[in-house]
Length: 116
Image (tube, rainbow, N blue to C red; front, side, top):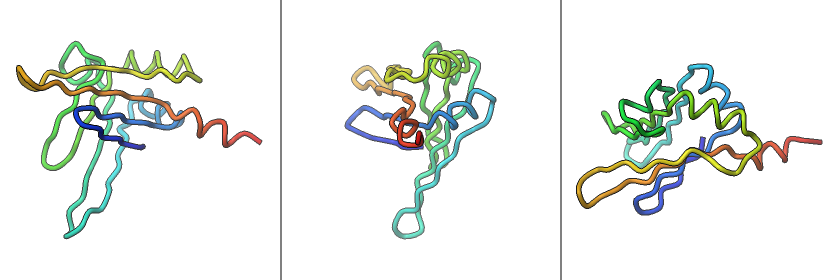
């Protein structure tokens, strides 16, 4: 799993195998150690409704962990469309002034590198 943060955009990039695990109902987890004993934890959870909203992706933050909820149907559609550079996109309204842009993509380049 790879996370890119640019301003108000978060892009989560997973491998085909990780997306397959997500489609099977598994949670993807990543912990990055930070200075002074801190860490950044990121989990991607499959969800029947994208985490309680109508959006295919919803981000929550609880106890120091970023949790991305992915609609199971959207994940399955993405998996069936591979290889594809398109991902799942959503905009989450944080307040009247702030929007968060979320993307889940599959790293298709890693698939090409593995081929002999």
